[in-house]
Amino acid sequence: MRLRRVAYGALIGAGLAVAGSPASAENVIRWASQGDALTADPMAANESPTNSAARKIYDVLVYADKDLKFTPWLATSWKLVNPTTWEFELRKGVKWHDGSDFTAEDVKFSFERALSETSDFKRQINSVEAVKIIDPHKVQIITTGPNPILPNQLTNIFIMSKAWSEKHGVTKPQNRAAKEETYAVRHAMGTGPFKLELREPDVKTVLVKNKDWWGLKTYPHEVDRIIYTPIANQATRVAALLSGELDFILDPPLQDLNRIKSTPGLKIKQTAQTRTIFLGMNQGRDELLTSDVKGKNPLKDVRVRKAFYKAINIEAIKKKVMRGYAVPAGMITSKFIHGYTPELDKRHAYDPAAAKKLLAEAGYPNGFSIQLDCPNNRYINDEAICQAVVGMLGKIGVKVTLSAIPKTQHFPKIKNRETDFYMLGWGVPTLDSHYVFSFLTRSADKGWNGTGFADPEIDKFINQIEIETDFAKRDALIGKVWQRMKDDIVYLPLHHQVIVWAMNDRIDLPIVADDGVRFIYTTFKK
Image (cartoon, rainbow, N blue to C red; front, side):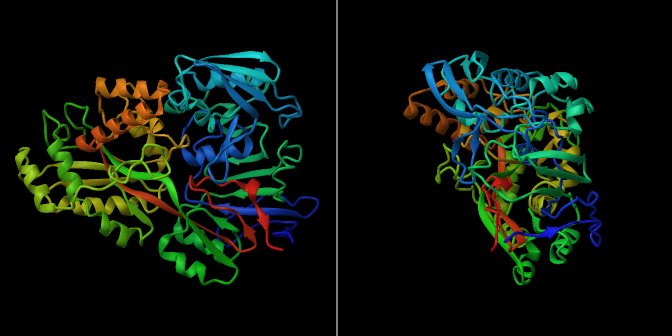
C-alpha cells in the first residue's frame, strides 16, 4: 500500500503551503526540521543538513549507506595503482537530470571545483593533486603523498555537471563569506534520485522523483514528491505532525516525545549519532573581543580552560535539558569514529570548588566577563544547553552573556574569527579522526578551527596521519593528537548527540547515525 494518495492543494493550520495540484495522485512526503540548508550549491557549505539536502539531488563516487558503510555509487570500483594514485571505474549509462551523459570530464571538473578557494571542502580533499582522465568512464586521482583513506573522504564530494556549471556561470562555488548570490544557490542539476523543482530558502523546497535515476532497480522507493518546510518553532512543528499536515519531523522536541509516541498513527525512532557537541574557546587572540579583561586573553591559560570544564555539570544537562537523550563526552568525537577510545572519552570531574581555585590561581579570583555565541536552530536544544552553561559558569564567577542566533549568522562568526566562546557540533563523514583534526585542530585551517590553537608538532602528526599506510603507526599518532587535545583542553566536550525522528507509522524510513535523511530507503506500510 502507498503512504498517501493525494491530488494535493494547500496545507493550512501550521502555515505550510505547497505548489499547485498535479494531474494525478502522487506519493508525497511532507517533512520539516528547525532549519534549512545553507545553500543549494553542494560545495559552498560543509554543514550536515546542507550535505543531506545535496545528497538527494547530487551523487558521489563513494556513498555512505544507511548503515554508514562505504558503497560503490558513481564509482563502481576503485583500486590503488601506486602509493599516490587511486583509480576509479565510473558507472556507465548514468544521465544528468537534463538527459545528458555523465562522464569522467564531470568528475575532473567537480574535484577541481571542490578544491577551489571558495569551496568549503578543500580541506577534506587537500591531498588531491590532480585528476587524470583515462577514458570517459575511468579516472585516476593523484595525491601529494600516500592517502590510505581517500575513498572515505569522497562521501560528500558531490559530482556536478561541467556543462551545466559553465552554462550558468557557477564553475566556482558560491562565496558565502562574501554573501554571494549565484545561480547554484537556488538551482541544482545532478544525477541523483530526486530533481529540484522549487527552492525558496528558509521557506520551502520541493523535490520530485528522478524516474531515470540509475539506482532505481536497487533502491526502488515509491516517493514521488518531497516537500520540505523549515519550521523554527518547536510547538508548530509538533502540531503539524499531530494534525497530519506533516508526515515526518527530523528533530522533535524532547519534551514532546511521549506525546508523539502515545498518538495513534505516529512513532519515533532513535539512535546514537556520529556528532559531538562541544564549546570552543578562542585561545589565539591577544585580547578577547567581549571580555572586561583588557590587554590579555584569559583563555590562553589552561587553568582557566580547565576551570570552565570543571564548572559544567554535564549530568545535569543530560537529565534536565536533554531528558536523557545524550551521552556525556570527554573527547569531541563519537564511538563510530576510528581513533575513538573509551579511556579518552572519560570526562574530567565536575568540581566547581576546584574550578574557582583554578581561576584564582590564574589571576581571576573574581572571574571575568565573556560572551557565549550559540546557534538556536541547529543542534538538539542548542540554546537551552548554552543557557545552562551560562548559569554554571556564573556559579564560579564567570559572567557570561549569551548570544543565541540562527546558524546562518552563527557559523560565519566562527569562520571569520568574530567569537571568543562558541558552541559547535561536529559529525565525521569519513568515520576517521583525521577529519576532525584537519578541520578543528590543524593550525593552518582558516575555517572551523576558531580556537586559534596552533602547534607545529601536532600539525606534523596530522600531516603524517594523512599519508601513513602502517595502520599501527597511524593509530599511535591519532592517539597522541587526541591526548594532547584532552590535556590542553583545546575544546570543552559536552555530549555525543542521541537523535530522535518522529513520523507517521505508515512510513518505514531508517534512521541513520549521521542524521542524514536517505529517502531512497523509504518503504510504506502495506
